Image 1 (cartoon, rainbow, N blue to C red):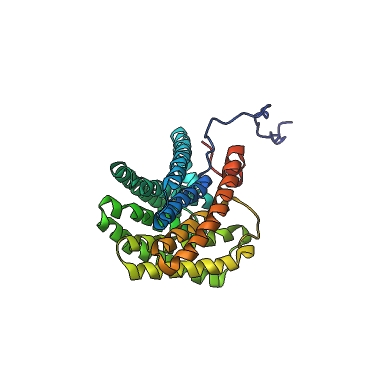
Image 2 (image 1 turned 135 degrees about the vertical axis):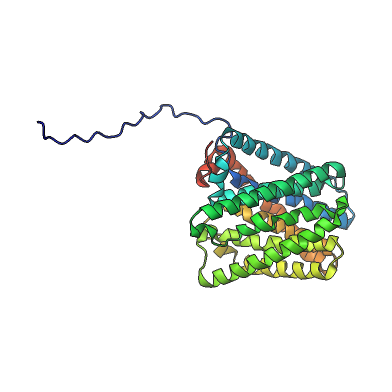
Length: 333
């Protein structure tokens, strides 16, 4: 009939593929793997610090650092392939919390590799350190751009802010040994102020709202800046400041250790990578101070030698199996 209304036609969809189409290699490379890798590199640095202070051979620690450097390079190449295939995945990964944490940890890992290389290949370490600082600055600026364009709830303070904006302090581990003490001093001053601001904002937020169980492991990240600031301050000869930061890191770590069942109530996830690098940074800081700090430092290192490889294995296994990208909502190129 002439007056009959047009019939609704459903939108055509392509038929499902069978078997399902396989994604290209590294097309969904998850940034969430990098915090665990950063923790494994930190474990090598803490082990080398302990062996040096105890007068033992550092070859086992250097072997760990060499292996973890190769692992970081493999993961970094994987993400570079994903980024080259579709550059827009960077912004998409930065919109989610695991992505922001992972990409910041990736560039922090490059700075940690510079600290590993400093005693053996200072010229290479300088190049690696500069690259790490530049890339980390790029990640921080990209995160700020995503915050500006995103909804207000995205700008809510989280412990991951330490990785994004205080993570530069990892560069201070290598800078004095490479002949750049002024750089290390600047990093302590600037990142120390940023860490203090984040600690203050986080404490106020925690008083108003307790984080949900899946996000509680991220609270351990608060230990890392204090431990790293202690190490860099000690290397600069700022002993009083080093002891102050170490004491704060130790107190916070003890409080969190007493709440471990509460922190892990949601069960294992990729966010457990947040346990790794604060643990190794605390051990290295206490061992570096020596004296009465040596015993708690060695205890922390002993715990890290068990916990960090176990967490790293679980995260790497989920990456290899493909579930890590799915569970952390990684972008697809």
